[in-house]
Length: 235
Image (cartoon, rainbow, N blue to C red):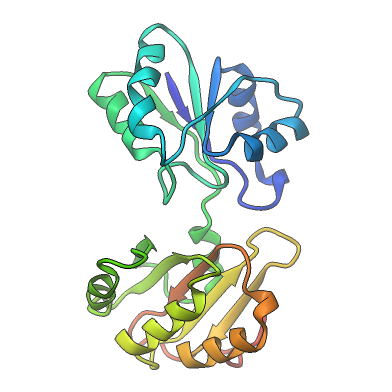
């Protein structure tokens, strides 16, 4: 069978006992970046063989993985951090397994947007998860669509496009809805930054050393009111 195994998004202590057991006992681990996964395995003294499986080779290697599964191999899929398939490779392989009638077991575990959303204090009874926006083609079209959604919006963004993202929020969604930028989730320097898109852009431009690592950007639901913290202040 194929196991989908979430891995820590920051603090390596967040891995579950079940995840450790699966990674220790499968025949093979497919890893988005074998170097990253090797550090995790070394910490927990896991010596299972690794093979790369990422966005650049998944089309070429999926059939081979299905063949291994039909031969009776048990395989685990991990990404660099979080749950495979959520803005990471995994969807194609799971779909192929279902089509080939191979069993898939998905372990519960870390996903960056869940603690960020809950910790923001924005309404989370209904929310829309966008993940990563297109880098260029189709990006404005997505923003125009997101602007029509009244619920809390959740995005992933790289540090290289954070300033651009905040400017686009101002342009397409406006300044009434509050924004929360979350970084370093589960790490020692985890921080939540609140404010309007303009205020946050100005703050991050003034503090470029804070713009590092993948960010979770959360836009409050329509009519949810102002956040209680001062704009741009860290939590």
